[in-house]
Length: 466
Image (spheres, rainbow, N blue to C red):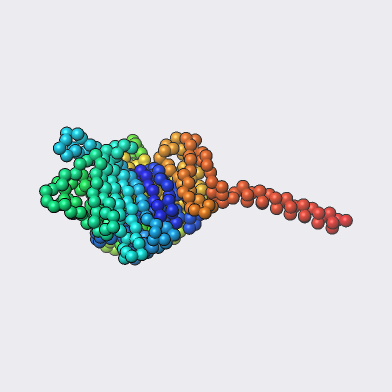
């Protein structure tokens, strides 16, 4: 699970400050306020980690990528190449790392990794260059050891490796300097050839790649509903960036049983989706049938307005848009981090509120007798979604520290990411001005003008009577 994140000199962000990442982390703000670029940055790192090009520091994306960010100059803050993109994040490890210090019986361990990197691209450089990468092995909030690669001054491709609290033992031979790191995070093969005790370094590389494999993304524009869906028995990795694999995911998960909390009865994924759609008051019944043709399936629903079974395209558009959200949340494997933009899109206010309850069920859900350990990173515009979470905190349905919320404030000269201070009663102590519009201003002006028009009508009526 991602524990913290900080991004500097990326797109609209001079500095996000350190973001506390919780099981449910929310980002609010006006359109074009920069909140989407936080998730986009993480997805760019993921697609870089999965790119076959080991030399590319960043892979900004192509036609089939989750994000397409253009050139480095288009990414860097102010499009100023004097700025250096820096980023820090930490994440909890599924299993603690344990090792002994070289030539010592002292044991070191950690349950969390912290990472820092700096990337620059001057006018004289054709591609971005990673100047610094650093790992800290943490036990809770205390660092057990650190190791970093740093570009040597006045060189382009020579780096030096430094470690703290873990002496690196050099192999015999002449002194030389390793070349550039792999992508933005990896120690190159030369480091393993130069030092004898590199098990730790290999473990860091591996843990980083596992971390990015746990990231999933669902964009704000989901595919339209179809009358027929093809499924050849393949198990998709996710519902896809636009929800294109939603039905395939449900069909592939027929052998999986998930409960919505401790000591609650397990259900199939299809049963859970049907239950959640009903609780959101969007449908009465939901099922997926074979159409009678090989590998062709239909999504059938019943609504309150009709007891007849109808196809997915025959019901409200909001259902087809929220279906990928629900499926991705419950289909994702153990330990997943799901980044979603506007999951509430095209839903009416009551359903938006109910969607917050679904998200609470997601982070409480269990499979095979253990917590699924799902983390949700959500960009949203929904006041109703937030209000329901505030209510559930007050009702002790979800712990206060399991929700983290931020507001991208564009009212000042520089974009600021403000943490919303939510207390144990669900109150937001520092509610930003006009957070969800100027509701009180609208009410006041409506009352003022209603009174003004009423007085004008009464004056006009008296004039006619005279």
